[in-house]
Amino acid sequence: MEQSEPLPSHWSDLKAILRQRRSDPPMRLYLTAYAALGMILARLGDLDGAWEIATRLQTIDDDNEFGVTLILAILSPQEDDDD
Image (cartoon, rainbow, N blue to C red; front, side, top):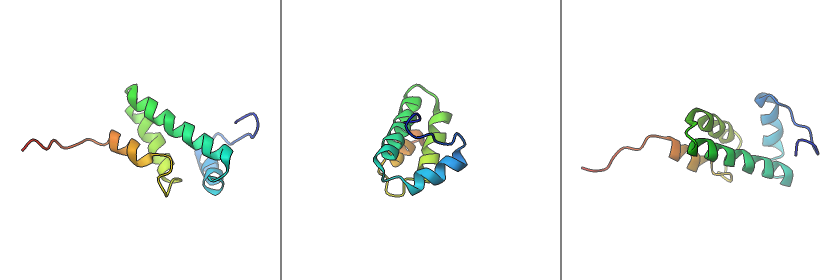
C-alpha cells in the first residue's frame, strides 16, 4: 500500500486521510491490517502497543467495522463473576 500511495508517518496527518477515505478499498485494507496488528500485539503480550492501536482506530471507526470494540474488550480487565 505504501508503494502505491504514500501515506504520512505521523498519526495526526494520517488520521485525517483515513477518516475521510475509510470507505476506499485500499484504506479499508490498511485499517483492517492495522486492527489485525493490534490483535497480534495483544496476543504477543504488548498490551501498550495494542491499546495504542485500538484507541487510534476508535477515533476513526465510528461504526466498529474494524473490530475496535473487540480489541478494547480483550484489553480491558474483566471483573470475575464468581459470586
